[in-house]
Amino acid sequence: MDNQTVLIDNVDAIRILTLNRPKRLNALNDNMRDELMSALFEAQTDNSVAGMVITGAGNALSAGADIERFKAAASNKNKNSFKNIVRFVRAFSDFSKPLIAAINGYAVGWGLTMPLMCDVRLCSENAIFSCGFVRIGVTPEFGSSNLLPRIIGLGRAMEMVLTARQVTATEAFDMGLVTQVTPQDKLMGNALEMAVKITSFPEPAVRLSKAVIRHGSQSTLDQTLGPESEYFKHAMATPEHLDAVKKMAAGFNRP
Image 1 (tube, rainbow, N blue to C red):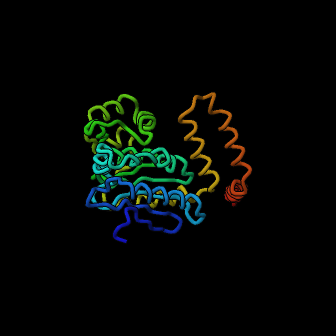
Image 2 (cartoon, rainbow, N blue to C red):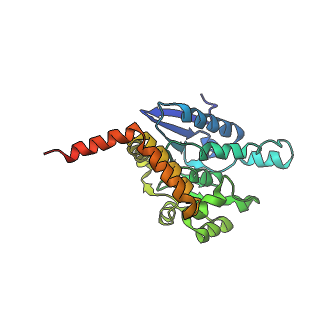
């Protein structure tokens, strides 16, 4: 449908979400927010979906929040425009399946902070990143005040946020903001290949590994050790673990 702000496609067990407001550089509006939340909740409970890739139509992942949302909120025409923001963030942070961001172009404001919620970030050579919040008189959002310093370091995060400057794909790779830079025409292929690779491993191990790394990244060592042990024991108790051990043992025992 022409009015869909999020397109949904499936490649075998991988679901692709495409932000679909290319004439507005996929700027986030309330419809896109609601469609994204619905897509995440649906994929979370759909056993046919093993992992997900999120990308953008046209020349951008997203240029950030639609300026019309800010104008409406500032003029009190839409006081509720941002009231669901925590629920929106939680839809990403609570998503238990592998989630890969394929950043195809401009990633500005929310277009940069949303991918921080993803497990892996790939970008094309055309990608341009910017924490443009101070330009329009607002502050970082979508959990980025926690995640961005953890991913690229406090100094780099502070400099990106306070200067609102543009960061190229190469610099984003160098600072660890993305893990892979590809030609534009290979981006989705590489993202799908990575998603297939990740989801080829035992599902409980992938899901629990994602959870324990998320927990550990936001905890002290002492806070990590107990839950880490519990996740490990939980994974060992799954039939998928036993099957994987049997297959590995059979490989070792070949003449």
